[in-house]
Length: 370
Image 1 (spheres, rainbow, N blue to C red):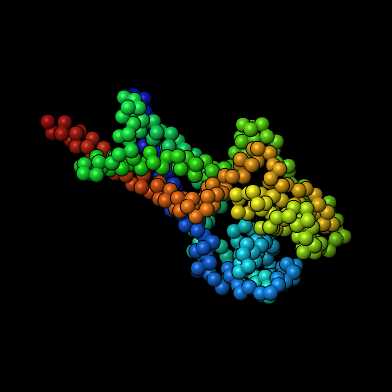
Image 2 (cartoon, rainbow, N blue to C red):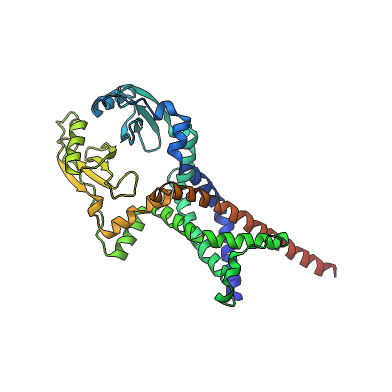
C-alpha cells in the first residue's frame, strides 16, 4: 500500500503539472492530422488550380516567385502531389512566409505568414507553443511525462489481488454514484487508450529530440548512423546554381521516384537537396534524398530509404505513425480520437482529486468540531 501511495502521488502530480500542455497538444494534434484538407477548404484559391495541358519548367516558376518577393530568401519548395495542387514556396524559414504558385501558368497566386492563418497558427501551437525552440522542448518533455503517466497509471490500474479481477478495470458502472462513475470512467478509458497514448507520446518525443532518439534506435539495432550532409565545393566565381529542372531530371534518373520537396542552400557550403518518396515508404514526404553541389550540379550523396539501415527504417516510421498516415483514413480518425484522451483523462482525474481534497477537508473539520 505504501508503494501504491507513492506511485499514486507521482501519477497525480505529473498529471497536474503536464496536463494542460498535453491537452493543448492533443486537441491541436487532432486538427493538424487533417491540416491539408482544412487548408484546402479555407484557402482553395491558393492550394488548388485548374489542370492545364503541361506544367511550366520549375525554374520559370521559381524565377517568378523571386521577382515577386525579392526581399525574402527561398528555403523550401513543395512539389505538387496531385494534378490540382499548387507549388508551395517556404521563404526565410520553415514557419515564416508561404508563397503559392500555379504550376501550369507560373502565376504567383499569393502568400501569407504561417501564423496569420488558422491552421498555420494551430500547427505552430501544436509543435512549438508559438514560442519557438523553447516551446518545442516543453512539448517534448511533456510527451516524456505522458509516458510516465501511462506507466504509473498502469501500475495503479493493475488489481492488487492479481489478474483474476483484471476485467474490472475495463468496466464502467453506468448506474453507480457519480463519484464511482468518474473513477470507473477514468480507469477504463485509460486502459483502452494507454497503448495508443504511449505510441503517440514516444513518436512525438522522436520528432522533438530526433538526434537522441535516432542514436538510441541505432544503438539498440546495431545500425550505422545516417551519413552527414555533404558540403558543396565553394566556387566564388559561380553566379547561380545550375538549372533546377536539369537537377530534377538528373535526380529522377538516379532515383526514379516522385520528388516531394526541394531544399535550397542557405550557406555557401550547403548542398541543394532533392527529397523523394519511394513506393515502399510510409512517410508522405519520403526519406530518400539526392544531394547536389550548388555550384556545379555534381551529385554529392544519394540516400535511398529502401536501402537504409534497420535503425533508420525504424526511425523513419515514427513520423507517419505520429500523424496517423501510416494506415490511411482509419488511423487518422483514430489519431483524432486519441487527441481528446488527455482532455478526458485530465478532467476525470481532476474531479477525482477535488473529491479527495473535499473529503479530507470535511474529515479534518469534523475532528476539530468534535
